Image 1: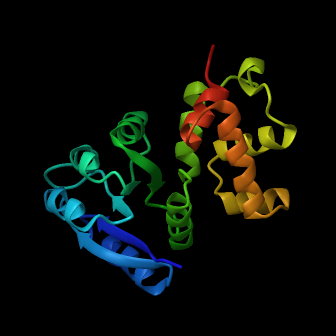
Image 2 (image 1 turned 45 degrees about the vertical axis):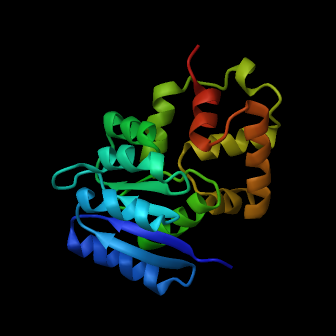
Length: 210
């Protein structure tokens, strides 16, 4: 099985080294580069084309969101995972609009980071629970709108509710006593029924306000 090629852009050396150690220790990953500034990443990311870049927002000089905007057109294969202390709406939505596909808070544990990277690589959009909750709060009504959840089975409605709380696929599987593969199959059908391509779009569509 091919390793997931990951780069890190993080200015705090201790955090950068801790994530690097995780990627080196886990046989599922290949550490491609570690950088402390976005200006370095602007050249390095297009040159090395990693599968995933873990990107801090608050960097010296250019911030992480502007870096993603700059390199994304040249790196359509590369996915970006925000890794930050910020959980305010402005940063969340600016990061997603810039092209980030995942958003983790720095309080996440190392196993959570590893699981989130694998989920992102397999087509998911992992987010810390607090971030998913903020997305839901922006669009959610008290119950699922009938015109938006039409066609979803009771199990699919249950899974989209759990996704909205920020649970990873494995955590949903454990909660429902099913396999991760079954969760992925349900999510694929949810995307097809809602005519969306990722978790954020699905949550927004199901919970959006009239």
